[in-house]
Length: 236
Image (cartoon, rainbow, N blue to C red; front, side):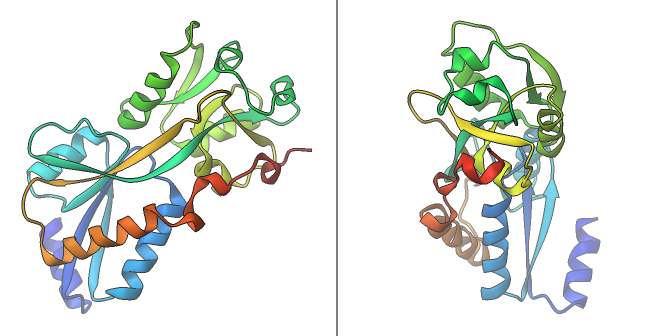
């Protein structure tokens, strides 16, 4: 399939190709900005996207099926380099008119008094690892009533009043759901970190330029989830 894709890319006039693997439901605004910059600066490079579980991404990087990837895990084993790409503030997704909205910042113990919807650990392994680390700081075990494979379905269940969810602020902002309100956790601010993954070898010039574009995006305040406020998400 990849050989066929390379032939098609060459026939379409592309001079080079980058195979980009995505795991853990990567934050939409960051990926959009990165791909738009690549298209503008190097339109001759064909970027092919593959949405895969983390384990498959790691195997594909080792086997040269992918050139680079993004995931929410730095636990990648030998032979793979994990470099921080960007961070997204963690928020509690709460149904509109929920009693927890009395809090401007919700204590984690209060969150865990209510049912939660979570990502499926098979499809969002890195994301789940980061959420579990945060939940370990609480004295109460979470009551997970549903595990889903996409953030869209997660927020659908929150909007319907089935449960709360812990998500990246950018995912919630991108969903534009008036039935869901965001609240930060009380105490120290928590973030979800996305890493750029690649083989531990000298990158090609095309890949080197791609990696260089990620750094400005990660430090650009205009892309930071910190600019997100709950008032923009339907709070009355």
